[in-house]
Image 1 (tube, rainbow over the protein chains, first blue to last red):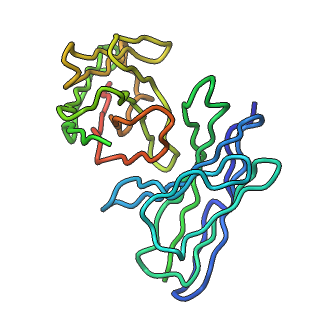
Image 2 (image 1 turned 90 degrees about the vertical axis):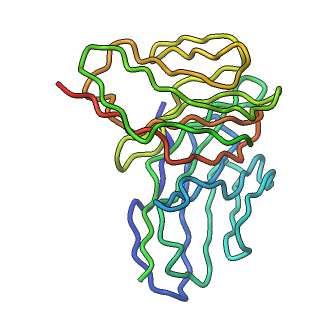
Length: 114
Length: 110
């Protein structure tokens, strides 16, 4: 099976702009979670989607949003970018939780805000 | 989720066992111990997890103390490709609100 894929891999934006990141989970996986990783804060949970519904949410401002499509692919959006949003954004997918909740991470999208 | 404490760095000779410790003294009864690793510029990779019994898979072994306040990840025969940052986290099963700390940077040397 192909792993979790994320696009784009690298992105450069300026303050005030918005950005959309995409994640395709492993085939058959229904849950997608998003994380932000920075050197100072480590890896922090953003939100989780399952069956097109947000199931869990971390402690991030409303500028960070996401959605999931019927094919389980997910997007996250960050509006009004700030310098502090520069980070590696990771997506992880999980198969049916009744079987396992092990998360499989993608390679990430490195966002740089200038 | 409970907080974990790990040494910032460790070295290991290639072919030898790497033993990575983790303290989680405030772990709750329903929290599992998970280990992930992250090789530079890649996403974290799941290694192993356990609740209270020792666990082994094709990658590693996990030893959890009887009081569950600490654990050790064992890579039985470390290779150069095992050089990575290793994260120990504790979380409730099915709770994806995971926060990775600084982890342990393991360097495997020839």
